[in-house]
Image (tube, rainbow, N blue to C red; front, side, top):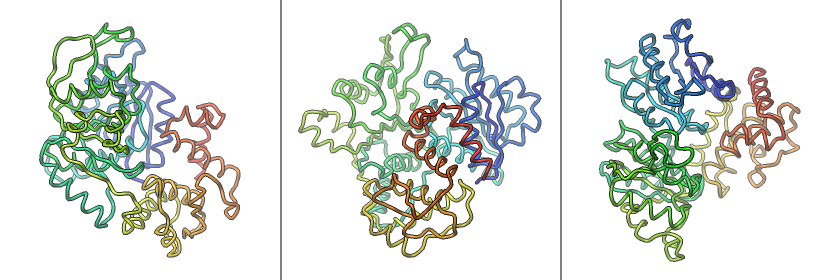
Length: 449
């Protein structure tokens, strides 16, 4: 747990509850504020390390200008605080404007818990490092260096390729099995590039519906369709000057592929409902777990698009091919989760390490992370033994580790949140309880620790 102080400013009680629960296990002090008008008189505002600020507070106003105004007020009172804007997709252009006005970074709604935590940790570490350095400008978008752990030969070969390619602007295709951490390598590429002070925009292509594809990627103008109540920029414009990461690109339909190809070829986009071409300057990085060459032969992926995105190909090795790294990664997550769940120091028994090394890890690093989290939650001692890991039945609970009903309940909640990428509504629905009940149970569990 970090000893930082976090203030969350948002007019939505649900947002405040979700963020307070999430961040209370990461930071020593987490406070919330629903009314931004209290900012000017808020006690010791300048003592906070991180301030999460919503872009919109009035129900009838969605311009985001309120966020810009309150950002300015915060920077007057607490100039050293790292301010992270919380914004819906439609206000992403204003979020970029906010960065130019002193914000450190922005997080899109709905957020992914891991990304939000990573963003805040990077901002917190930046604040601490600035305290030790001469005064310098911070009006650039923060990009946190990812945690790529290990020294296996397979990993070092990939990192060597990334180091060589990073200094160029060529398009890169990253492939690998599910759970291998392709996004981490994309961020490493960005970190080592000449664009590392600009934005890294991550787009999950598999989550974009076909009818919203153009609006999401290229933006739209007011009135271009029924819900287009204002001009909005797309992800290409948001990434201008930085890196655009298109994850799961193999999931695109052929019509969507054609539109993407046109933007890449022309280095420009046209917003939906407009005829004006807008030039874009991006570094394009794509990722997929599909074999795109097989997809080309099957007629489900355009060959010309593959050539465009595949100037350099980076294959991320599966965890089973990084045997030397498995224990290092396990130790990293062990330390992370013991801090998160406020457990005493826990170590891996030598038999446990052997068991981890002998397992094939079909789910790769994501599966290892989940196993370590489950083991830490269930463990009440100082050592994780081999029988704490039922690697072929990760979704069952062993009778060898009896636990209380409230502990089982917490495990089920954590599991549901993990399966739904931190989506509280989806997790609550799966568990058959209301969203507010989920918040209350989590808050009680954290208070009881």
